[in-house]
Every structure is written in structure tokens, then in C-alpha cells.
Length: 222
Image (cartoon, rainbow, N blue to C red; front, side, top):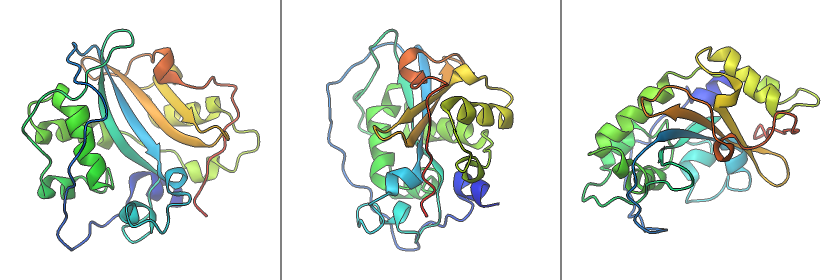
């Protein structure tokens, strides 16, 4: 079942060597606004890793040494009302190496784990442990269609990709599944939309991304 394995990282194994969690630098201003909804951002790893297979910075995710990945969790993002969203809320808490190891097969990059907590998680949770427990609960509830097979479909559209996900996850509807493509039309990310109670909800235009009729290509990493 290669498609399922890639999507849920059944082959992933955290490295035996001690992990280090690099520091994170703020890339924008502090913005403390009320949380109105959430986005669960899921990156398509084969596309991200294209050209990064020998990168030391991305070795665990992209070299094959840690396993094969399909969708990975980019992050759980609190959203505000309109175009404002909370970010970089002040906190003294950081992601420990032990916590990073627990979630490395979900988000296979220690820097990304640290960044997502500092930029997004601190605005919705008091501790990184609680933030990642919430993200992991949403992640573990997902079921993945065989996107390896789907990627071979002639004339594949965003609507086809959404429908396949909805059929595997009956709690969702197509308007709750956002998609992002790069300028060449390759799938880069899926964004699932949730309300304040973390129940699936209709995406706004920013979350939804491309229209159903848009042609989509999915890189399999081969």
C-alpha cells in the first residue's frame, strides 16, 4: 500500500542520535487577536523535497534515511476574523528535544516544529505539549486515499483531489478542503478548515485556494 504508507509515514523512524532543536527567529510582528477558526496545513512532502534530496538541512525528511513521507503536518494555525491572524504571541516556553522526537514522524523537521509552536501555537495554547497534542489529535483522525494512484489519473483536477479526500473522511465536505499549487501546477499543500471548536467548517477564500476545475499534478518523488 505505497500511497497509504507515504501519506501516514508508516516507514518513519526517528534517528537514534540525540536531536537538537534550533532557535527560531521572528519573521513578523507580534499580533494578538482573538481566534475565530483554525487551519490544519498539510504539506505534500515529495514536492517539497524535489531538489532537496541531498540537502543537509532537510536530510531527515528528504534523503530517505528517516522513511518516505507523503502528506506531513506543516502546522495548526489559529486564524482571526477577516485578514488578521494571531502570531508570535509572547512565551518563554520552547520545544524540547524530547517533544520534538515524539512528533518527528508527523512533522519531520525540528526547526519547523519549533517555528510552528513559536509563531502559531503560543497564540492558542499555554504549552507546546498541549499545542502538539491538539494538532496530533486532528492529524491522527485523518484517513488518506491512495494519492500515488490518484496522481496517475489523466486530467486530474483540484475537485478530484478534494473528492478523494472527502470519500476517505466522511466528516468533511469538499468546501472544507483547501489546496495550494506552485506556479507550475504541482500540488504543494492541503489546508483543512476548522471552527473554534475544531470541527470541520467551510473554508474562506484564502484557505480554499484553487477552484475545483483547476488542473493538478502530483509529484510522486520518483
